[in-house]
Amino acid sequence: NAGVTQTPKFQVLKTGQSMTLQCAQDMNHNSMYWYRQDPGMGLRLIYYSASEGTTDKGEVPNGYNVSRLNKREFSLRLESAAPSQTSVYFCASRLGGAGANVLTFGAGSRLTVL
Amino acid sequence: ELKVEQNPLFLSMQEGKNYTIYCNYSTTSDRLYWYRQDPGKSLESLFVLLSNGAVKQEGRLMASLDTKARLSTLHITAAVHDLSATYFCAVDILNRDDKIIFGKGTRLHILP
Image (cartoon, rainbow over all chains, first blue to last red; front, side, top):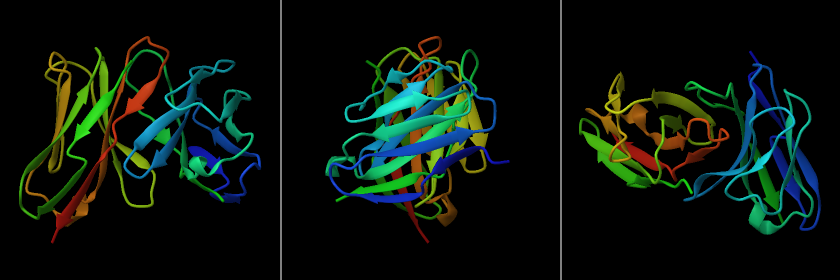
């Protein structure tokens, strides 16, 4: 029961470097999400994808890009990392559509930008 | 734009006491979720509330939803140390592109 798998778990970058956070789910979920968590700010939605082939901006999309590679995978890219992007990033997925379905979260990826 | 507000953001309480966490949201919503996060861990689902007047209970936690007031509450009865965690409410809107917005969380610290 892998659920939602995120890689890497930890990453240190220098300002201006780029990197991609990977996320994969094995639950045949339609919807996938990227959140960032900062102290005192809760979880803020960066981007989400309601189905394969679609992506939409969330609350804080600036400085990020996403790709819904297929139904299983949803990646988050930082093209030019900034210290303000130091955070814990969570990927989540759910079945989506009508009916209540809860999010399943990955373990998180802790990113530090120096 | 959907906004979700929780209060208090931090709560320190003694074991055995009762308390309530509040979650307000800004637009009509069909679904309200509560999640728990332990320090350094990911989030786990606690409750899903779907209709006005809905009440769900699990052990010492009880959640309720008032859609007319756009308010959900998470009530803790006779708190125990194991309930120390951060609790988040989240809201989405049926048929509105599947976006889910979280509150800032309530960090609950229960003193033994």
